[in-house]
Length: 328
Ligand code: UT7
Image (cartoon, rainbow, N blue to C red; front, side, top):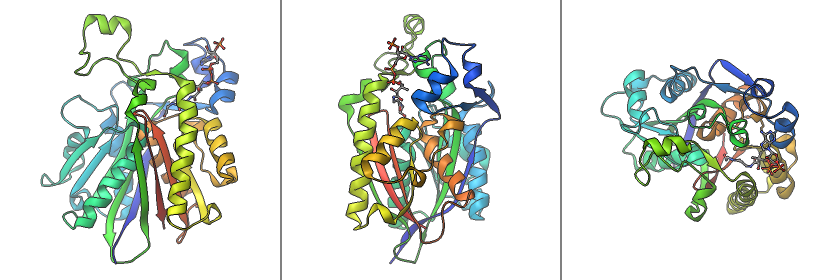
């Protein structure tokens, strides 16, 4: 019996920290409003010359080191991002070249917003089990500061930049690693969180630029309500499908969007909040990077031990959502 395990994790956040106090100088907001409505205190912001791939590479290098392998061992690279370096080609190709992953590797990006890392994990899991690939590197990386409207206080205070990565490989041991995954999407709700212009439906023009249509647009309240509902459903289903109870889940790592969403999820599931890993106070919402960043921190902080069950649960633009159960 074979399993796919997480052999190493890593993360990176840019050096510059933007506090809530700093934001009060940019938009009409307050530290009190941001903290009480979202739980965020500060976020990391990439430098002007730092692109998503630069963050991805640092996280990837740290994950490779953790897994005690080199880039030459990777034959599958998936980058989950909604802020690629270029519209064409994929950020994965930039990472592949700069990090030294051999040219025969399969390298591509996926677009599943904040659920992207879980989607990447599911794809890599399936591909490794086929036996066609030996070792996968999956990365969630974002420079969200490049797509938020810094004049829009309803969105710019929520997001940050960062990256997280994991090395996945197949082992001949049953019942460890990725135990299950339940992913979904509801495209009917896409206009709750999207960038209206810059794609084929509405190509870039002076008019779209003037209208600010290249920035992230969000109906926060609706996203909030949907997030709690879908995360509760997929978290419950994943645990029940595997005949477990939440008492057996040592740590839940939710997408880091809003502390109030995490609180509501914990309360609905009847799981104490101290079994949820939370770092959004220091990073804000980093979309596809949020779960691997939290996973890396949690592991390095000793919150994950051999034999533990960890539940990853996410939602994001699409609306996409999903949960992944891991046994260490
Ligand atoms: O990865 C998925 C990404 N998205 C999310 O997870 C977002 C989910 N939604 C949320 O986190 C919350 O809905 C927000 C944090 C975005 C907003 O919280 P809320 O409690 O739903 O606030 P609201 O949108 O109802 O706004 C309340 C008030 C409004 O003023 P009025 O109309 O009541 O006078 C806003 O204009 O707060 C105002 N407001 C602000 N005030 C100070 C909105 N943004 C700000 C701000 N500073 N930054």
